[in-house]
Image (cartoon, rainbow over all chains, first blue to last red):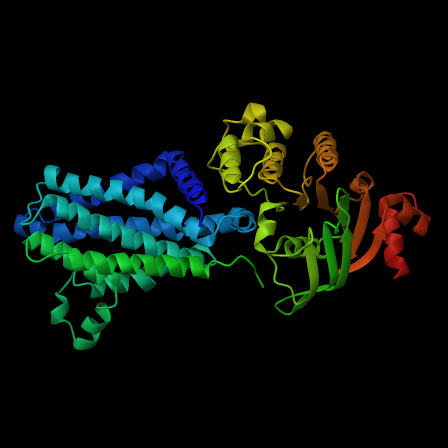
Length: 242
Length: 235
């Protein structure tokens, strides 16, 4: 792996984002808008908003990042630029890595923006540190990003890529402990949830909200998952076609 | 010195269809070789086999003295696909800077490359807003980054007006004079005369190979279209 090529790749993806103001606007505005709607949906029961909003802070950026990254390498496939890159010295790890860093940066800004908005504008109050909450929101967004990139190398068409959201992301959401604590699920389901990255992100968020327990282990597990998912993505990418 | 491209008994099978049959091809260094044939004759598949994008069933493909699809070759082959493979949401100069940065050695600067394809004035224009001809030239420019010794150009002049075609062919000659080898595909037969030598493909088989003059003498025909038809008749 060469740092020079990884940087060039990262810079190029960021440049593309910069030239696309509408995507940038949607990236930041839509999660904030969703949080605002959530606040007013629970208008008659503000306590419920305080309980739900913290976890949802991670979910919205995750969904957005998943959708954006899941079509990213497909765009390259359809425009022919992927083939152009596959005959160049650019490595597959550098290709996926560049996307991950560029969109990781976007995730960071997005999750920070929507969390700050929820905390300081919508008046979200939590027991733990506000900065820790921003941190867990970023973790959620990174999970969405990594899974999106991985399915993107796997899918052949945009139709397929988009459908990975109900197929891969939403089951994780149901099993993550967001709706009901994982311990309260049937044994089989809670066992399965142990192998899903999102469960650890929701665990961490809950710990931050209630200010109970350390999130170091959850962070490490998520970090490991991110590396595994992204490696799987670069592994599925093929230089040659049959 | 070894040939720029050497294919021996090359067979490519995609799914159930046998695309290339026992194909032989020798391209000497510094030549402009035209790859002609009707659409569906296997031109693109042959080019993809040479650049290392296509899995081959059997046979041998050697490029610049190395087996095709090996790592060192990635620094020295330029390839443009039929659809202009550029990022439409980047400017021309950003496109070229990006591709240049992927190579360990660049013989020309991004500005020089844009100048060579006559796009210097469009440097800061988004690739998506270029005209068809400009876009084709930008795609060609992306093959000139790094220090390519071999350029594989898949129908680089398709859909271009005659003036632009002449301009591009001028550029091809300049590149050949710089010592580069070019393999250019086309289904426009009147471009054949611009090539040093030709290979005619049909149904994945080599129909004929030689200089334009040789093929004319062989068939007794004047127009390249007629040469091609005569060669099909001979088989």
